[in-house]
Length: 114
Length: 115
Image (cartoon, rainbow over all chains, first blue to last red):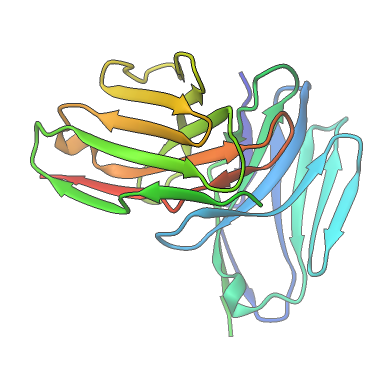
C-alpha cells in the first residue's frame, strides 16, 4: 500500500518568514495530493490540493509543488502569520475505481512566532 | 466544500458501554464516507470505508465486530463502538468525498473517553 513520509515533524518560524513542509510517497499510481491544516481539537481543513497533471498550484500565500518523477510534493507558506500555527498533514490518494482512500503523513507542527 | 455534521462531539462513558457516532453529509449525497481515528499528537488513521447500501471495508487490524458501521442512506453513516474499553478512547472523525480524486471534507470529530 501507499506510504507517505512527512518532514519536518516540527517547524518554528518567525512571523513573515516562509515555511516549507515536504512529503514523499511510495505508490507511483497516486495522483491526488491534498494538504490539510488542523488546529488543536478541531477538524482537518483542506487548504490546497494538487493533481498529478499539474506541477504547481498557488492560492494566495500558499503553494504546492509536485515532482512525480521523484515522488515528492511540498507545501510552501509565505509571509507566515501567527494564525498559520497548526498541524499540517499531507496525503496521497491512489488512482482509480472506487478507491478514494487517503494515506496521511504523520503531520508537521508549525509554530509562527510573533 | 461539503458540509459534514458529526454527532456527538464529546462522549464520556463507562467501560463496557456501546457508543454510536453519527456522520451526516448535509449538502450532497455521499455514496462513500470514511471513518478515522486520531490519537493525541498523531496522524489520522483510516479505520474503514463506509459504502452506502453495502458492507463497510475495514483496514487491516481494525476489528469489524467491534467497530460497527452502517451506511443506510446517502447522507448518514454511523459508527458504533461496541463494548468500549479505555484503550478505545480517541478522537473519531468522519469524512465525505464527492468521488475519485475529489477532496475529502471532515466532520468536527467525536472525542470519546472511556472510564
